[in-house]
Amino acid sequence: MVGIVGYGAYIPRNRIKVEEIAKVWGADAPSYKRGLLLEEKSVPSPDQDTVTMAVEATKNALKRAQIDPSRIGAVYIGSESHPYAVKPSGTVLAEAIGATPIAHTADYEFACKAGTEGMFVAYSLVKAGEMEYALAVGADTSQGAPGDALEYSAAAGAASFIFGTQEVLAEILYTHTFMTDTPDFWRREHQYYPRHGGRFTGEPAYFKHIVGAGKGILEKSGLKPGDFKFAVFHQPNGKFPLKAGKMLGFSTNQLMTGLLVNKLGNTYSGSSPLGLTAILDEAQPGDLIFMVSFGSGAGSDAFIFKVTPRIDAVRDLAPKTRFLLEKRKLYLDYGTYAKFRRKIIKAD
Image (cartoon, rainbow, N blue to C red; front, side):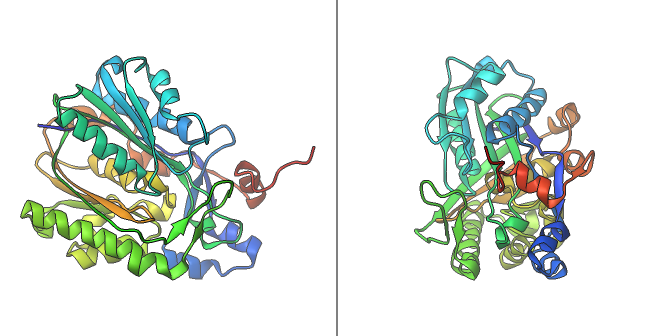
């Protein structure tokens, strides 16, 4: 049995409501709320970045895994907002949790599926017997240009997973991937904000790859949508994952536990992984979980998990994702939000 032995989440306390952003730009807030199914999003403080959030999420994963971090043989962070262009994020995380110096470390990039990319590699290394435990994190402090549609959804958060073969709480039964060169979203070197293809990001990009990966893993496994208790997809907004689920044959009820985007926003590399953490907080032994990520450029990773009895012993050892999402929130005005996200910088 190979799978998740520990998981953890982290979500910043700061939030900004859709109405606050729309007010500044003279936009119609109700249309954004209806069209994107968004109410608010998380915002990192000035002293928070992909690495600090990865550390916090991993501390929670270690609480559930109950292992010595020195036994972790690989540390991977998937993100499209690594704080350094030249300097790995993973070394800071590994040092912070005590996994150095005997650990393979790398940073992953593949837009919003960088987190699941790291998960696949970590799982594969453990499965191959190369190491006892491997760690993968999906984390982002997402960027959205002022006034752009992305500004309403680009959020922050992290999800961390430790993979192993002992005391597994969610076994990985199958994996699958689907990838093409579809340029729907991009950011060149030295550009601060990403650009996107508008509606083009939906039909030829998101839906083609989510459905392609989803159908592929269903065919590989011989399972049907009705066999699963939960399903989670990448969440750029609220409508896309619901539509993708319907296209694959999943019900809204199967999606609701992992659907966080209305109160969280799109956490990019942490999007579907954070949804998975919320599902693991509620899942029961024997439940099957269906997950498909999406990364612009474009590709999707699909996983099928089976929850084990171990979940009952560890789920309450760290804060649950819904608690992090709903409790102790601090609401920002647009000026404070813009300062925190460096959209405005004080002159010298």
